[in-house]
Length: 115
Length: 112
Image 1 (tube, each protein chain N blue to C red):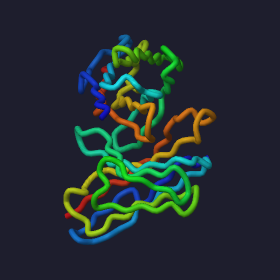
Image 2: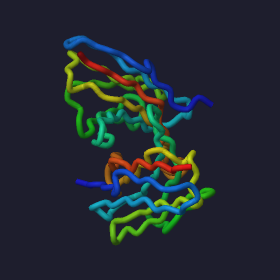
Image 3: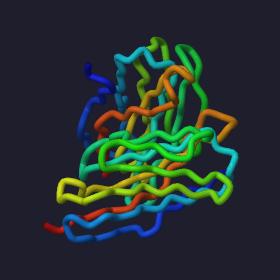
């Protein structure tokens, strides 16, 4: 069981470039999340999805976009990268409710540097 | 808005000691609270999940308690080992909405 997988593991972008962070889960979870983790700041929610075709903004959505065309995949798009987007990005998923217990499962993260 | 605080930010203990990590939250209308472990450069690993109706959960040497009325949770680690060295984070889900709120973590070092 792979759980939650993320690619790439590391990436360096130049200011103004764009990229897509990939996230896939094989647990048939409805809920998926994108977080960013900055040193000493905890995890901040960027976007989340409650199922295929449904997404919503979290605390810090500016500069990012998401889509959810399948249950398994939840890519995060960065347009016009800025140094403020240098961070570690985590994707997470959780089950549908009582059966899933609301336990979150995390991917290994993508470390992004914007220069 | 839910604020989650973890104090201390860092903790260093000798091997074999029992220890307690703290997590405080401002809004007691929570659905559940989850404790995670994060090793350097890695993702978060779930340790324990406590539903709002529960007072505690146990897994091996770990015991997590929840006191909603006072807005507090503790993670008790018995007989600490060097392999327990990591950052421990707590996250709270409110009764409404789908968002989880994370603390900034406690960095634990267990000295052999």
